[in-house]
Amino acid sequence: MNHVILIGRLTRDPELRYTPNGVAVANFTLAVDRPFTNQAGEREADFIPIVVWQKLAETCANHLHKGRLVAVDGRLQIRSYETQDGQRRRVAEVVAGSVQFLDRASESKREMAVGNGPDDDLSGDDFGEINLDDLPF
Image (cartoon, rainbow, N blue to C red; front, side, top):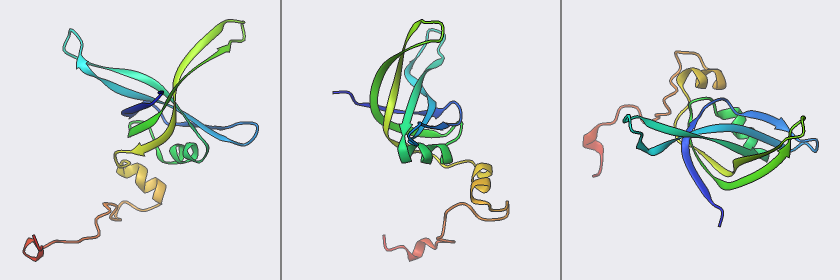
């Protein structure tokens, strides 16, 4: 079984490209904290390359930015290629089957994406003020 689940933050904005056949592919790197500290008591992270294909690639490129917290579900892929000077290289990367956005975009990024001004309410809260006495529980 080859199944990988990661939660971490993007180290840079996704890079979107298209294959010669027109298939979208996006790449980004995920910083995933290790569950322990080093000898100095500091947390370390692993930087894991992620590859996303097709519609999910376009969605990630349009909505994810450096620093966003995401969960990636996919498979580990080891591939090799030859450099221009003839050296053989191996790359380990996660090919994502799903990406879940775990936090909200920052206010400035959301304003640019939606095209709203700074005075608009982007909190997503349509409830207004709630009177606790009106709640049935």
